[in-house]
Image (cartoon, rainbow, N blue to C red; front, side, top):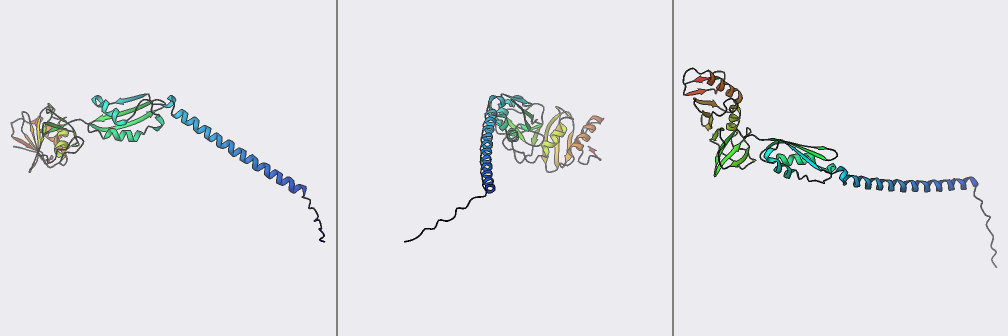
Length: 252
């Protein structure tokens, strides 16, 4: 017969028991705090989303400045519609899209909370034109083709000798004739007939005046001012004015 000996019962120190109870309660409080904080974050996110997508922060007006007849095209390029959350409007992306329009030189898009987006546009200005099948290509000072039209514009010179006339948005080649036209148009408004790139350089024909010879495409602004000054100072008829060296112009 086996005798079972009862083990003596170990009594826990009251201080240890109290410590365990305190630790257990503290952990419970931490869990409760984390739960409350998580619910608060969810509630705040929901509230923020509700505000962002509510009429309180929705685009209800798009102001377009400087676009003129391009207004509809500019609005279409931005893809901005009434009711869109203004917080998510990509100003940089919208401006880049507007700048891709051939007739736009620069564009800026700004948000004005809570409801307005402003688009400011600078349009390209034609300074010359070139013949293309069916009409004329309008060219700006940088040599960018702005548009094709059925008839040439009145008062602007034609560009001759170009090796490339692209579709709107592309650059003509070379760009020197367009740059020269841009430099001369303000000085001789309405008098320029054509700018020709010849083997000997740039040549300009004007109404009621001599042929203007500019040589290469360097220092065109200086050469243009020199040519305009010489035209105003002519006292005898001349067949040509050569300003290829602007500090030593020649009349003949």
